[in-house]
Length: 344
Image (tube, rainbow, N blue to C red; front, side, top):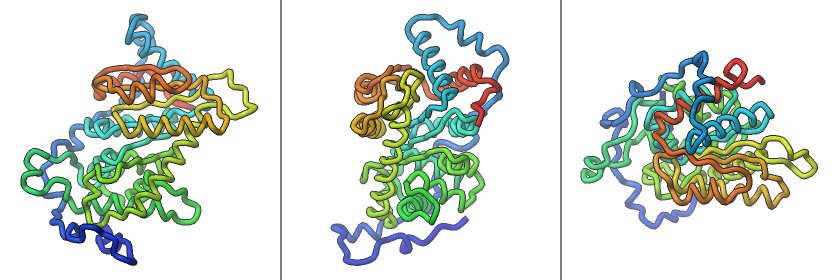
């Protein structure tokens, strides 16, 4: 596996950098860094357990039991009706080893769009290329090393470049660029990369950034023009997906709508989703039958407000640890799908 030199990824023309000294930050090889998470920690994805549907139906019809069963049934109904199920996730979902679960749900036709924040893309890239991720910030920061793994910054910058400047026949977008870059590099753990497998399977994949909030923006290879163009394309992809959750003018809007799940993201993805909802309604799409779900370890104001309460349709909140709640949700959904998958 090889990455382009940092100089190949920087822009040319007038120097507009307000802090040129920043180009000289010290970098280190990713493989030399201690990490808190490795592929050994990741989940497995067993086939649907016979009789699990009965277990789900036996849950109490009160509070979270009711909400959980309702969400499962709505996901199943959406996919059987050919409507999208989008999974928007914070980085912690990947840090707790759930990439195999997401990839399995994409392969089974359950998840049709996956949205990441930039931190999630970073963890995904490091797992795929190095087999470990999540540095010790408390020790790295005082040493001036936090966020300066060379390969990570260059790899994400190359993903932005490929997303901003797609080859003929390819769609623009940061998530697609990240996936294509990893498929081209073919690292040993590419089978654990969510963007790479989304591209391989033809599933929508987007990545949404807040410039300056992520370690890769400190890297000399980071190109603001590429990052902005690729990320804006991904917002437009999300607007298309959110529109498809509902029904266009003239369509019969009486059937089940699609599902948008916000899992473990407190700010960026709930804000992205709300603006996409506004675009869809502005264009005349009927979102009255969509389902939105917020799944997190705690209740967060913005996610509760922008995902569950404000949009049309039905909003559902489930509180629980990702590493427990998502495997349970996966098994419940698969148990109610014929053959444990959605037919093509």
